[in-house]
Image 1 (cartoon, rainbow, N blue to C red):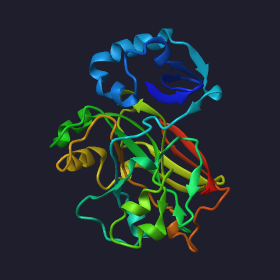
Image 2 (image 1 turned 135 degrees about the vertical axis):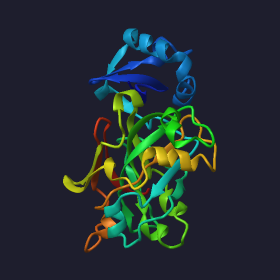
Image 3 (image 1 turned 120 degrees about the horizontal axis):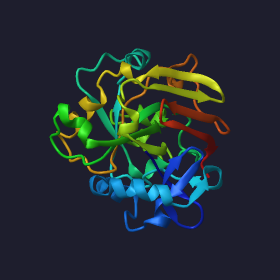
Image 4 (image 1 turned 30 degrees about the vertical axis):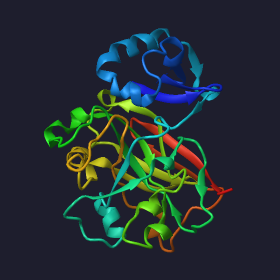
Length: 284
């Protein structure tokens, strides 16, 4: 099932995407959930009702609505760095013995087709295609062999990075957290439709030129490793996001470096999950 947050008017709605249409759960069964986070939190008790409601819900053409970030304000956006061997080589780092984590602030969340802002204070904005895991029931101290139970679904993500801010200190948070720099979506595909998340192709294009092309089978630390590790530190809650790493081909590593500029069109794709596409615009 593909679950989206969208607006076809004034109010944000939750819907189920089928083909080129979205069935509005908010219009046919508003009592089920008022937000995507609530729907995820209640999924074990309402899944059957959601599936039945989707069959009778009014349908709108995707072309007539605006898809928002599936979770407009996630509680947490955690991201792992240096998780593909080719990306590690191109950045000159050694293979990490431990998982390298940072956070992107919730205010960085951005819609799947909304513009990416190029900040006034940065001249080195970069792209990073990523698989994003969406936490379901979550928990604390989740063993690796039960990590799949804690995940609700998956979507595409772009870990947009202001490299000059990122590299200015040993802490990456500011360089990773500019407004609009965490686009994800275009919807959440529930894990039952995805199957093994470690067999998915990931790609990024800038103005039609392929820059990144890899597969999640090349993870250094797989999704279940990540869930288990992060949950040792913090309680993972419904709707939290884990950006799972990017492969080689980032603009920073090109010779000469190729950073994003106003007017550039960035498209990221993940097999089975759709794509994001955004135009870069100078910050107003």
